Image (cartoon, rainbow over all chains, first blue to last red; front, side, top):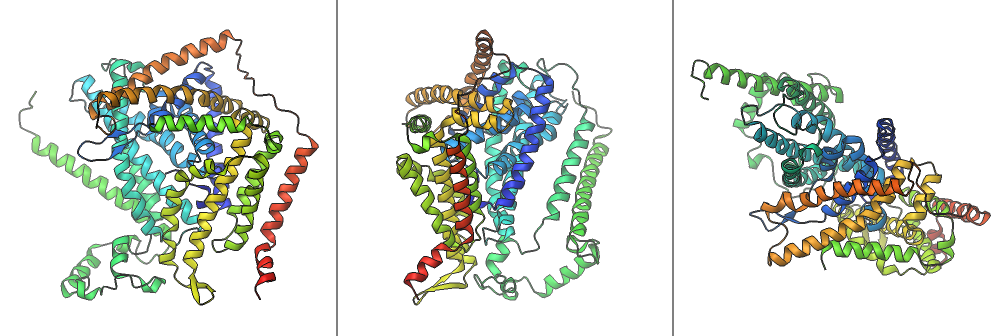
Length: 353
Length: 267
């Protein structure tokens, strides 16, 4: 995901430098306030370890390929978000300066895409609520903690990689260097990084589980004994997850492309937007426009109070965003209903120990 | 040779290049850093069809390669990191942008082909510029220069320390990987059963090593102040170089030199 200089316009590069620089400034300030000089060598050694560790190939069972681990999540679980962020900056700088892996001007963007999401978003929204929370309470304490570590690592890697990949698409499109439509570029990047995120998450969780088994006190927000009451309740965790859903749903749908999606585009073309006919298939002969489809459309017209992801009669992006938020709320509502229904049906049955 | 040994060789290669002596090596690191940033900014500011304006910028790295006596092939080896994402983005342009932009005799060249070539040339030019900076400066002098530019001391010291330990850790992991591969012949990568323990073992030892490192730093008188490489003062020569660079880049950016040159030949 390391971006080369060529993919960025100077304005975008400068904006990303400013954003990453601000995050770095805040991190330096907070670390200075904490005043733990012994942390410096720990950060340096961990950063060097992650740098080298990312070159290890892990065999993915059942496939011929291999994966790598996710540096941001590992470092923030070990060192905390601020120290982890600075360590990631240093890793990315060395990769850029000595291996040309990521450009010098693109460093700000790369720090944002990989270090900021991996450390701050990954730590505050995923690692701390989940690994330090009290999910899986029905399991034995140690097993529950292990399950929380695996969940946090996998979820964290998937989310941060998705955000990172989306930022790459956004930054490249804003720089105007590619003719690839935004939607198609997204369709190219996001699924690949979903798979990578899952694998990286599993590898990272394996390393963190090993650390938990041998030296649990090294991990942030993890109860070493696995016995004491967790600091954060399930309710708080769910509340934080709800916020994540709202932010992601609201933020992403604001940017949701009105272009046809990649597959649709590839099959039927979009001559109106200046693209060629592509495979030149006719929509009508492929069932997209038939009597049944028309009737289904008419039914949908009646049920959808938010037609085409936008409040009726409004064409502005805010309408899109409102419907994204409402959609998230609806999904959350359905989830709550399912939970309530489960509780209702279980009631009366004797509780199995 | 595995991936880590190759990385180690690349690191020592860069250190060796930076230890050489030439006109470029003797320039002040701050002048080189700022001129490199100006160069990359000028290159990136070209529009996606301005291939001819960009082509002139190739002259600058070529001149610097000559002045510093650094072999070009080491730089090209690093293209393997630069190209993949640039390719992924650029290779689609000819398919989406099919309107002919210019005619080479009877052959029409589409806008997509021009923008793809522009993107690749940008990638190459920026790579050469940052490679030349590191190959003639080295991490020690670069860090000293960053500190003078008021980059926080914590970050600069961390960069220096990490750079030193990247060598140690990579070497250790190279040995571990080699030992693992010798015991698991024909296996590609680390098996799932050892996913956690392979790096985890080293991670635990490294945490102890970090504590020892801190103790040894304290014993040598470390007190929140790190001594960076000695860098001579910013002389008039360095200022002249920086001004010259800025003027030339601005001129090349504003004046379509390639078109003028072409106009002399083609009517």
